[in-house]
Length: 88
Image (cartoon, rainbow, N blue to C red; front, side):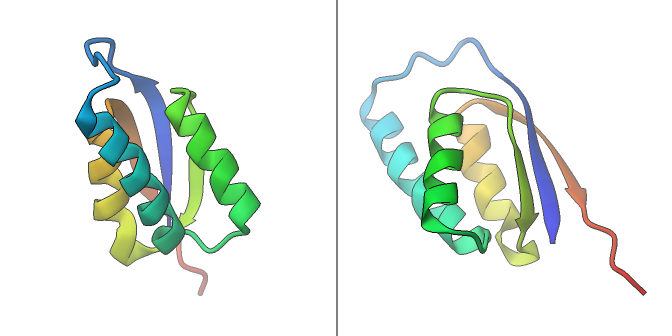
């Protein structure tokens, strides 16, 4: 599991293009696969990301980190990804 923290957003992104609509749909799909949480919590996370808030996504599955990171960077997010230490 890992934590993805959105530190900020790039200012040069225009928005309201066909790609932005695709990115929003794809974001929801990727979050659903990456994080085990309630549907209402996922919707809240997606809304926060769409409104360009700085939020933290916790307990992201290791095999989904690249996928979520890709879509967030495409949307203009500046990220910090940190692995969650394994308990011994």
